[in-house]
Length: 303
Image (cartoon, rainbow, N blue to C red; front, side, top):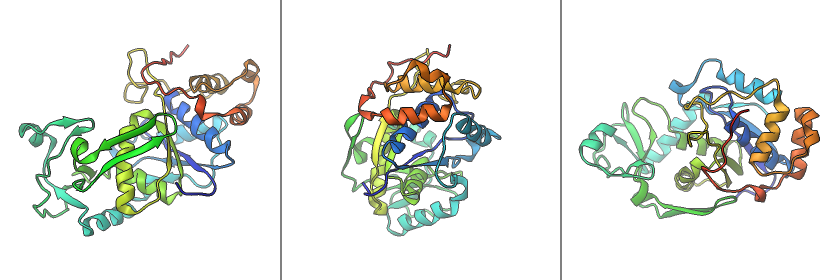
């Protein structure tokens, strides 16, 4: 991990307004950075343009302000960085770390390609074909990848054998959309992020990101993954499952609920405080070691 000032971030996708799960991540990342006198940056992850909902970005910014969050510097938009992603992808292609692929998921299913923890384990059908990159997906070659492992500050040791369990994964889709894995690694590096706090559904992805850090020769941040907020059906609270937007008119109650979910100290008197003051108090008492790493246990039922 890079030394010096702690730099954390919150990076929502503008596919809808913030919900309680997003708020938990925002509160945790904010308090964790601020408790170490660090910076807290804001990034809008709008790389997957078909998923972007018109007006969602301004809804997100309005909610963050209503909840008392103050971020450092300018907001970074992934949609402004496509030329940079392309230049870094070219680097990997020139190093022969990547190759173009003409296989579709359907064609792979028809070939009986087996699935692993993160979808189909791609068997390098196109690795030696020298297909032109234009109008094809681009895959990262994991043939020489050793076991990718890291120590998560909440979930402990985690590892994946990328070659056997994941295969060559996509960095740019056939429709020209850059993969989250590529964008997030390059953005975290460009913003000098050295502490990444996000949902436990990205634990596996972190192993992919570590391998990308190696290929690009980038420093590795410290990772802290948070237990997921689950709805009454046992599904992760998300915009896709129709999670309710957080209430901008009553931020105190939701902030306290988020802190309780994170097993942090709260006080009944906080309900009468301004959101900025609640966040200041939460930062003062913040201890990430109190977060319990269970998933699929704590259920948030909006009252």
